Image 1 (cartoon, rainbow, N blue to C red):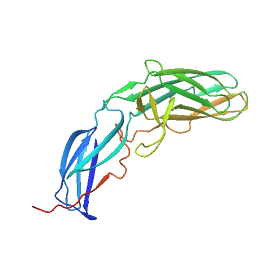
Image 2: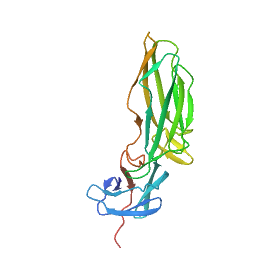
Image 3: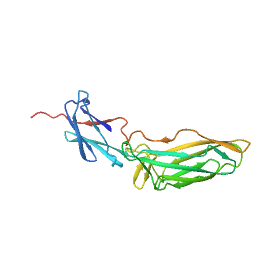
Image 4: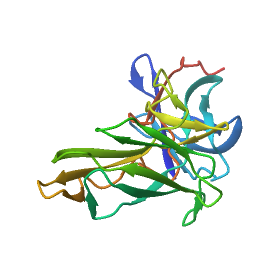
Length: 231
């Protein structure tokens, strides 16, 4: 659910008593009357079926103003790694990637590229299966020391930020937009050849709202109207 606020002014001053009509993707979603501050607001729940570029428009006295943004699905990245690795020995990383497909429903994200980057070797990209799972085989570092392992869903196409399209880094997959997600682990291998694996930080999932329309940071649409004489 989002709140859309329009601020109407005339000659630089708030204009009260104006009826503002709100549209989402050209469909009327409500109307409200401006208060003494010239503001009119409505709330609107974006359907989970909506994804991608959207436009919100307001109209008052024949004057319109619009803002646009991208509605995207939050993602959940869960990673399983062994708590102990041995120097120069193989180990398995298992990833499960899901996206929020309903108010309380999470569905597997299939066909998504997951990049596993050990700082002691080349990155490996795996693709999630129909259950949102991917399995990657790695070889532990060949000498004692401190290392980092990062697992990330950043997608084949990252959407850059720009006017009306924020934030940057959203993932486009088959024409559908998702939030990126990542998690990092530290691996500390002692002189005995054993290494402990511990999370550096919890998963980073960009999920500001159930479905997120951006930008609405200011929360205001400013319209300039001309006072009309009564006939």
